[in-house]
Amino acid sequence: MSSELIINADFFETRVALVENGQVAEFYVERTSDRGIGGNIYKGRVVRVLPGMQAAFVDINLEKAAFLYVSDVQHPVSDLEQLFLNSCEIENGGEKPDDTDESMTEKLKDALDMQPNYNDVPIQDRLQEGQEILVQVAKEPLGHKGARITTHIALPGRLLVLMPTMDHIGVSRRIENEKERKRLRDLMCVVKPPHCGAIVRTAAEGIEPEKLEAEVDFLLKLWENIQRRSEHGSAPNLVYQELDITLRAVRDLFTKEVDRLIIDSESEYRKVLSFTETFLPSLKTAVELYDGDEPIFDAYGIEMEIQRALSKKIWLKSGGYIVIEITEALTAVDVNTGRYVGKRNLEETILKTNLEAVKEIAYQLRLRNIGGIIIIDFIDMEKETNREKVFNAIKEATRKDKSKTNILQMSELGLIEMTRKRTKESIGRVLCESCFYCEGEGHLKSKQTVCYEILRELERERREMFGRNVMVMVHPDVAARFYDEERGPLERVEERLQGRIIIKGETSFHLEQYEIALLEA
Picture 1 (cartoon, one colour):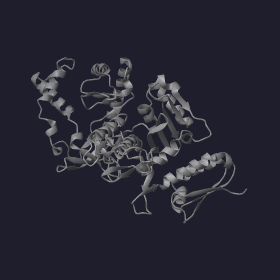
Picture 2 (cartoon, rainbow, N blue to C red; picture 1 turned 90 degrees about the horizontal axis):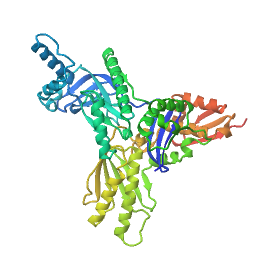
Picture 3 (cartoon, one colour; picture 1 turned 180 degrees about the horizontal axis):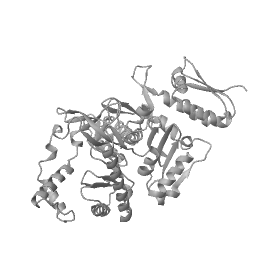
């Protein structure tokens, strides 16, 4: 299977697409004005403890307080360690125990095991209002909800995720060879320090022990730096910021299964080369700078797939179609035969439509980054064997998905209920906003998205417009955005065109409508 990682990096937003066999499998976008906070580590202050919900609100200097569940509050091992050491000091007549004593770790472990089950300790006994704690954003703010945070810190690297606050070793489920899984698990037991956990990532399959050990050392130094910043900083305060989207894509998506990485920004290209020289020297030759005249997402057919991913109705090759409806509580997917009438009998027609829909649904869920509860309404089938075929097909189709999924058997009504882990907003919510024409019944592109589409269109026609003055007629709200928040990007495009761009508001225009015309010299 051929795979390519395509990165469109501009000064106003960066877009990343993972293309598998010519089809966009995953898509991510990050805007300069609204960088994500997932993975960031903050020193926060508890502002409210809710015993009835067994949760707390923590101020991490965002618009909304972050939400912390009781299960995400770590066991205070450091406090228990200090109690144990103090008791040892009393037993030794005032002398501190020897840190080099090999039995010390076992004694400490036994002491911790004798403590009451920490899972049974309520949140009001774990946290107090005004307490300062170190937390990490596990889920970014979604809709009207604030960020979800955890005290179980995870520092992702290329080969592994270091968990300095948990004593646990895991291996990626995508590594299926049991012998290799055991080798990596045994290796991590040797290279990781005590009271520290790690999850070995898929990229570590077949890796040499030295490289794994080097990454553990690097992440431990990073953790020590985070601790120092936390100790010397006041709350609320950002103590560690996750990598930007370009380097995250290189770290998380640029594996040995990806044939090449193509990027259209020279500055970002140099940044990627520097990163790969340090962490991925074997993949450095697979990094390419795109220099074509056509915009990179147009050249690889990605722009068309993004537009398709914003549609509610998706047509299948047979003539059937699926409808994806995202609500506040869940996502509903409806399968229909549409124009497909089949050849032999009704049951065969329905089965073929459902099996074709399975592949498209799995693809759309991954591409659109739809998470939470998902209900799929397949066309009713009479035969139990056919229902089983559809169920097995969707389980197989979601195997490539990195997000964890849980799929239940098909019900008598032809419904399949499933969940997909959600950590970020879907691309529909990122690229669109509630429609003020229909009072929120549907969606349309945001003013920011329309502005950026116009800028890309101007770049696309740069040869014909070079040195000329251009008139752009848009909806008045889009015009206002150009003269305010997007003035910087507009001036940058003017510099590239070496001409003046005149923005004119037209009250009769739909928000997404625009026209570009050359002015007479």
